[in-house]
Image (cartoon, rainbow, N blue to C red; front, side):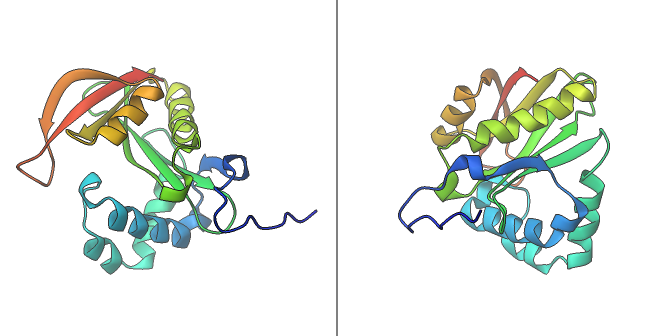
Length: 180
């Protein structure tokens, strides 16, 4: 049975997106999503759109293959079929064996506010627990109230820890944690 496409002004139905771990075959779609992420939220990520665009496809493919298996690092996507609409990564903390650091969280603007953020973070959390790490931590740019409130809604609390932004010296990030 084929679904009729939604009218252009109708918000997307979040149930049409499968949240899953990336697969090596996702490399081209991951590259497209990465470029979208950097264009939409340039201060939230550790590279520029120019750097990402210059990276060869083979490098994207190798990176996606690396994060598609194992317990050190993983990436999860929201996939409604066609282009990817959300992403969240997790990696084992080098300093705290029971902690997974969440990184590169993104939801395409038209899909925001529909529960995908929680589903992506829950996928990272399930992977983290399976790998023996019962806690999650992420960092948010101080002043990014939209992201701060969104993370609060899915159970993260502000730890009070503030750290320098990794690429913009004048900015700071705050750390938030929750159980996996």
